[in-house]
Image (cartoon, rainbow, N blue to C red; front, side, top):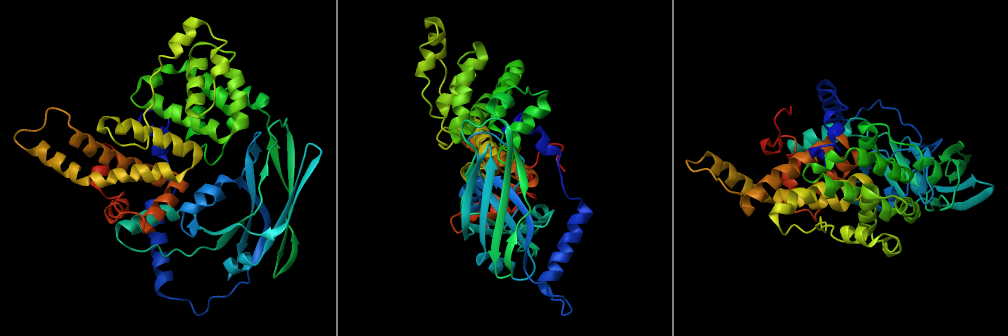
Length: 441
């Protein structure tokens, strides 16, 4: 888990909803479920004029593993070369989902003297947007076996087409214009602008402190900024003591390699920069490139025989998805959280949740600790017991603090593909004492 040291410290101190707000929201939701207001006024559906620019991965990866009701994706205001985005529109009013299903969206991007037009087309996907604070209450309701009754007041549709920043883009501003065609007529959307930052500019902005480093990696999946990866590596080279903590090296390697794998343009620039360096920056950078699947042989040939020999002695990272050796599972959890934080993929969280199947190992371990002859040596069963507790604790921490993680957990609870035993554990993340740590509330 990245939570052990540097990377998720900030996650443990954020709580968006107070206890009183939770009680209020729950009461309102339950009332809405059990009674309809006969005097409620009906509002015709309409499309808001504002547009949203968000990562293509939201549609391609995230929304395929979420329920109809989701958290709102971040609106991007800064992009680097190689990044791809979709355009989103929001509808409010009664029957807004059906309204969006019949609507069409076109958009045009003006950048560096070029115009990239995408004609009217049906929306690629439509999701309802959660009310603020909904995730916290959902967790409480799940623990009590109560279905989430929240009523949403807005829905979002995503463009069918994407726009990608050219791989050789320089600094500039992209202007996005969009139009919609719906049963309400033709509408021009409000124009929006997105800053384009070259790798040269982004890589030249040093990270100032631990907080910037943590924020860059922990929230990367919602605000990706690959041009900052090289400054992150430079900062890490000055804080190498953090790598001495168990699992952190592997977690960071997974984070860096995931970013590079997702953006070949960023990887090309990153490779060119680390190839001119030496020591830790070059070594760690090359390991991340190898893990991402890139060929580094041309760089190795430029290194001295001594440096090549030292580099080739690096240890192999474990496969984070292969829970064969119980001793490696904590490290694999670290790596999986690193992958999720940078890519927003569903698979890492789904894999960590499989650790919740080891509840019987935890029960046996607790009984053994209370026996006249408590265990004095590590065993695979104890390893699984600890992994069970770590899986539940980390999933609950991310559920509280990462909107996407909360969406994924809700999806797993509802999915017929999730084993019943794991569903039960997921519903009890907030109440299971095995998932608590000293000092937790």
